[in-house]
Image (cartoon, rainbow, N blue to C red; front, side, top):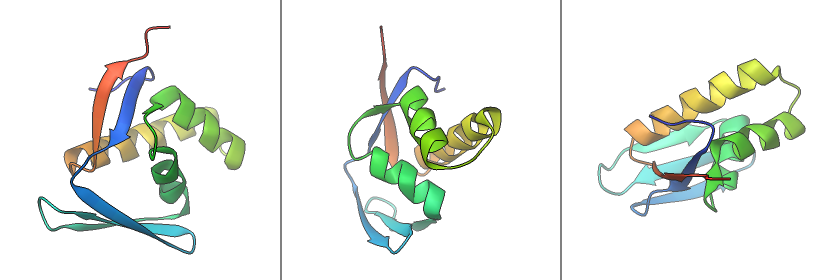
Length: 96
């Protein structure tokens, strides 16, 4: 289970490509393709470096006009889907 302090990073066994405002990801383990819309692609770009979930939410709030509670719910849902699809992994939590 992830929290706002969880550090999320892209899993090693995937490749991705940007297409205009979208991203396409191939999980090399499963052979499954995934597509991300503009906001999902923004999250994916942030995940190029390990990120705390709270920092991802903050970045999305700065980039898009969205209610903070809705943003958090959507980011958590997306990250949980990515974890289930083995596209990202959760590292240790931020301790500060």
